Amino acid sequence: MKKITNFRSLGGYQNAHGQMVKDGLIFRSGQLFELEDDQSHYLGQTLGIKHIVDMRSDDERTEFPDTVWEGADYAVLDILKDATANNASLGRMITEKGNVHENMLATYEQLALSDSAKTGYRQFIQGLLRPNEPTIFHCFAGKDRTGVGAALILKILDVSEQDIMADYLQTNAERTVANEEILAGLKERGFTDQQLKSIGEALKVDADYLRRYFQVIDQQFGSFQQYLREGLKLSAGEIAQFRDLYLQK
Image 1 (cartoon, rainbow, N blue to C red):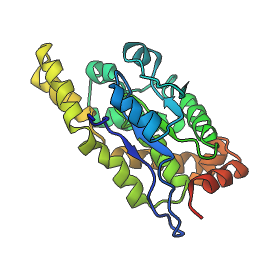
Image 2 (cartoon, helix red, strand yellow):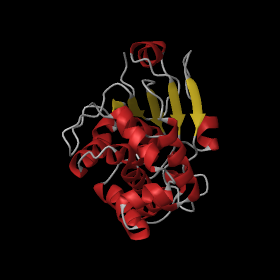
Image 3 (cartoon, rainbow, N blue to C red):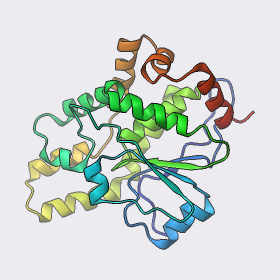
């Protein structure tokens, strides 16, 4: 079976209290466009994934529709719908002018503060409050909107900052081939070396980006717990239920 780009389970991490995050329940990936039959079978039958959460925009979903296997439900949460800075889609990576690093930092501020992100991530966490129903979530590359979603899950489960960052940065290794294919295609279309360099940088994650997300949360809400309560409007009961569902006893 051909590897599914940027695909992995969020299980197996040990948290600050010695509890393990349950494996086989939450998976992250890049977009599920034109999956081959054996890939769909693996996700739907072997892993038993019942829920697909697509965090992409309308334009992205129209151009690259997901493969939805039989028995799976499909939900859309357009995380950056009303963001003023969204460099998380390929189209914006190509057209965006200016410093890539600064543009991406601005995107991560929007992932923390924009209304669509706060609403989307709240609905995402609430949608995971189902016992033993495996879910896969993704965006275009599975790196920014998805990366924050994964960090949010692991942070709620009290996984260490070191492990959260390691999972986040794993994207760069997981996307090596896919990024090379994207850049090769753009080169054939006549993109300059400077444009390709900028897009190549935008296709990667950087520890600074995720750090900025958590810094902005602390600045605006005072703490991560306050962000969950006031920003995402998740109740103490929902957080307790989430931990109960996804941490081994």
